[in-house]
Structures are given as structure tokens and as C-alpha cells.
Amino acid sequence: MSALLTPELLAHIGREAPPKTELVTRRDIRKYSIATDQRLRKYLDGDEAPPMFHLSLFWDVVERDQLTPDGVWIDTLVPKLPLERAMAGGLKIDYHRAIHPGDVLVATRVLAAMYEKEGAQGPLIFYEIDTEVKTEGGDPVLTEKTTRIMR
Image (cartoon, rainbow, N blue to C red; front, side, top):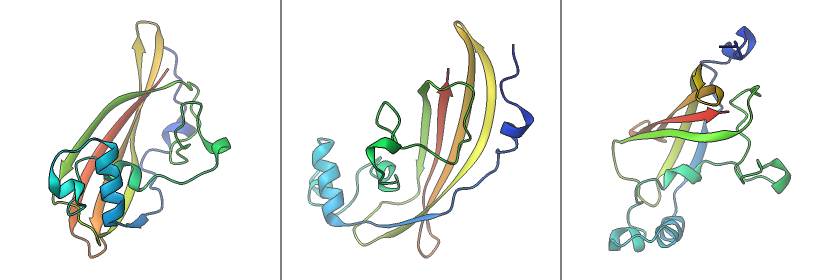
């Protein structure tokens, strides 16, 4: 297998993005709940955020020319990799408490790992990002591990 991940690229492991802070609103919870076809009244009324609500909460709002061809914002935490076609590799979320309107949430993200594997059609690069979301007061809300595959 070729060594696509150079020492310079691997040096990015452990790099942390600046924390992002967002206020959760009842309106945002309601819009997300309707868009994702939630059925429980607590979600539709905006009293509690449904699972996965946080995923887009911390996304950067960018101009179209700053999006990838599939419409995703370009994550500057990850260095430019020699393989460019991205695929989802997995998502693991551990919830510690519910998200409610009025919560001020702080997300920190770390590039936790990068590694190579040989796939059936050639080399693959995997990277993992660990995200921790807490309240402004420091109470844990959730932890998330996202794995992406580049080919």
C-alpha cells in the first residue's frame, strides 16, 4: 500500500477547532422537528430537541462557493488530503442529557485520528473527528465520533 498520509498530514492529529457557541431556540427545534418528520409532541412543540438536532446547529453558514460539490461546508479542521471523494464512515453519538430551548451550547471538535486502508478498488483514507457538546456552564450534553472515508 502506498503511504498517502505523510508525516506532515499526520501532524494534524490532535488539532482542535475553535469552540463554537450556539443558542438553542424553540423555533429552531420546531423547524428541525417538522423537517425530519418527528411525531412526538415534545419535539413538534419545541420543548425538547429530537436526536441529531445538534448536527447542523454548529455548521458554518457559508456562501455556495465555499461548499463541496455535494453541498457540505468545507471542514478546515481536516487538512487537504490526497484523496478527495468523501463518504460517510460512521457516526456514534452518546447523549448525556436532553437539549432544550434556551440552552447555550458549546461544541469543541478534535481531529482524533487519520489512517489508511487498502480497499477493493484502491487506497482509502479514514479520519475521525471527536465532538464534545456541553452547556455554557460545562455540563455534558453529548459526545460524538464521526468517521469519514476518502477515496
